[in-house]
Length: 114
Image 1 (cartoon, rainbow, N blue to C red):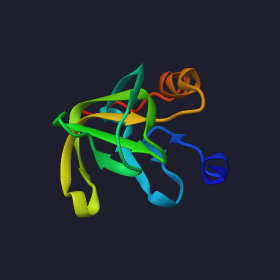
Image 2: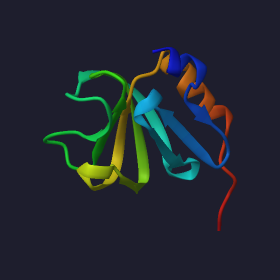
Image 3: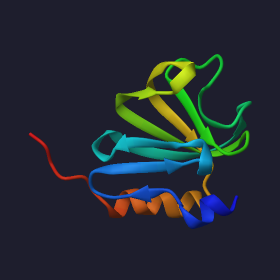
C-alpha cells in the first residue's frame, strides 16, 4: 500500500493516471472522463483487469475492493497485457477519498478541442 501513498492517482488537463502500485497504471485521456460515482463492489484479482460479466468495464486496484466508478465517453481502448485490449466505458478504481478524486476532476477541466 505504501506505493499508492507515495504515487497517488493523478489528474491534470491532459490525462488521469490511475495507479495500482507495482502492478501498473491505467492512463485515461482527461477529455474522455465524464464523471465519477461512488460504488461498493469487488472484482477478483489485482492490477488493471477486465471486469468479468461486464463488457466495457475495467478494474484498477491493488486489491479486489473498489469504491469509485469512472465513466468514460467516448470509451477508451486500454491494453491490459495478457488479458488483451478492452474498449472501456467504465473504470472501477479504489481511492482513499472518492470525494477528493471527484473534486480534482471538477477542478481540472480539459481544454476545449474542436
